[in-house]
Length: 299
Image (cartoon, rainbow, N blue to C red; front, side, top):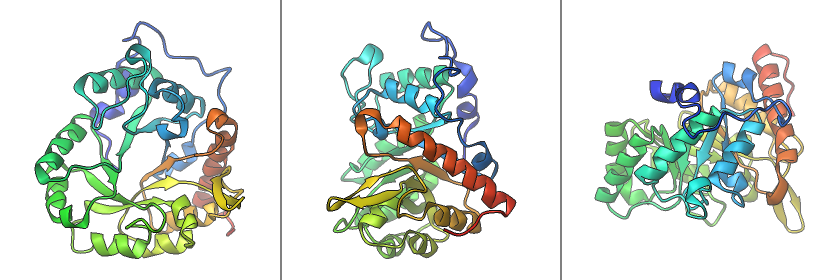
């Protein structure tokens, strides 16, 4: 994944721009990020959708409490601060973008990928979208595009140097199966690939590691989850305690030599999810360290 010079300096470029100093984490840290994962090229990001009941500004506070450096944003979330209950536009306006950059700088965060399932109906709309994504310094755009648009969108991806990662919702969503994603991507450039939503694979009755193997060479990023089945459905649990085979997926990512973003999506206990998210960060980095040192075991 590319990170521009501007994005690499966001953490130190704007401290104090809003008239307040970066929050101290000494008392509030729940985890300390994923430094061992970073060493092998795995960027652990937190989706602000994990905190959809809160504002984007509050989502940044919560992300920092996990020791993470990256946050993925989505349209429709309440912005907070001077914007009050106004929600993030799709794509963000110039004013929203400027405010978000200031907040990111104050928190020492970097923006990760941008995800939305709403996309323009024509190529002119896609070009306007890519213009804004470029302004936001987005490397990878996650969505579920109509296959008829992929030829034209592929050209824009190359022109703007932005990946398009096809996301999978569970069946009967069109892209529920990696075979369908792969078929759509084949014949297109390497700018077109997959955003692997591991929880939705499980909801569709698929083996997560086998799905990764099928998509070898096309994986652009992850929406990462671990789930258990309860009461007729699935819900998130701390990574390594569910049925998605997190360790196996990370071993496969290492085998494929992936250097991508793992976006943390925790969609359970919405009001107070941080106590369950923190162990996932610890587990992710622990397994990354073991895999890199050759001490990891399967299962």
